Amino acid sequence: MNFVYLSPHFPPNYYLFAVQLNNLGVNVLGLADEPYAHLRPELRSALTEYYKVSDLHQYGELIRACGYFTHRYGKLDRLDSHSEYWLETEAMLRTDFNIPGLKIQDMPKIKRKSSMKQVFIKAGIDVARGKVVHSLAEAKRLIKVTGFPVVAKPDIGVGAAKTYKIHNPNELEQFFEQKPPVDYIMEEFIAGTICTFDGLTNQDGEVVFFTSHQYSQGIMETVIHDDLIYYYSLREIPADLEAAGRKIVKAFAIKERFFHFEFFRTADSRLVALEVNIRPPGGMT
Image 1 (cartoon, rainbow, N blue to C red):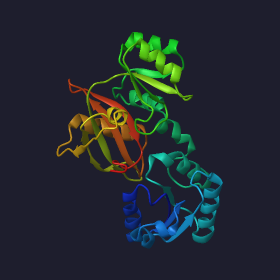
Image 2 (image 1 turned 135 degrees about the vertical axis):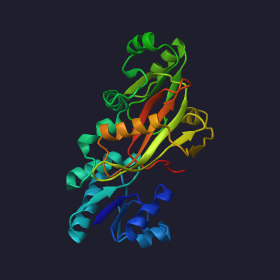
Image 3 (image 1 turned 60 degrees about the vertical axis):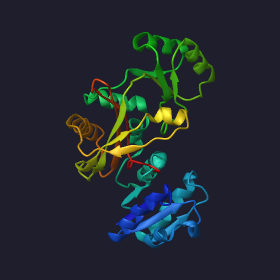
C-alpha cells in the first residue's frame, strides 16, 4: 500500500501515525515543506521516501510530488494529513489522482457550518437556531426569533477564530461595521457543557472505536479570553450521545476516517449538535 502523508511532522504528535503505518508494512510517502533534516528521527525512519516542497499551499508543487510518487511506486492508495486545515487540499489531490476518500464534491457539508446544520436536521439531531446572514437587516430578523445573545462565526472556519458573542443592538451594529468579508453564520447562544463523540470508522463506515470527552468550558470563551481549557475522557458514554454520534456518522457517510463531533449538553440534558470534524480528536494537545 502506498500512503501519501501530507505534513507528517505537524502537529508534532502525529508522527506516530507514520510510525504505525510503517510497522504495518505500508509505504509511507511524506510530503511537506519542512527540511528533511528537521524531521524527528522516528519519523524519518518510518518514511519510505520524503518529498520536500517550498510551500504546501503551492498546489502545483503537490501535483508534481504526487506524480513523482506515482511514477516511482505505482498507484497511490491513500492520502491524508489527519489535519482539518488541509482537508480541501487532500480532497483536491484525491480527486485529481483518483484516490479513495473524501473528494472535492464532499467538502461543503464538512466545511460549511450551515451545510452541517442541514445534515444534522435531516438526521433528527437538535441544532441551535440560526443561518448565514449577509446584512444587519437579516440579522435583526433572525434575532426577533432567537433573542440576544447570539453567536456569529465564519461559516467556514477552524476552531473559534473570529467568533463573536453579541449581547445587544449596539454590539450587533459594531459587528457589521467591522465584519470580515466572508460568510458568517449567526446562531442563538446555547448555554451548556461541551461534550464530544470521537472515534474511527472502517472502510464500510462502521464505527470500530469510539470515546467521549467533556470540556471544562467553551472553545469560544477560551479563544476570546486567551484562557486555559482542559478536557477528560468519560468512563461511561451516555446512551443518547452514542446514538446521536452514530446517526451523524451515517448521515455524513464517514468511511475509514477519524471523526470528532462536538455537542452542547444543556442544563435540561438536551443534546445540541455543534459541528463535525473529520480528523482525530485533540489536535495539538
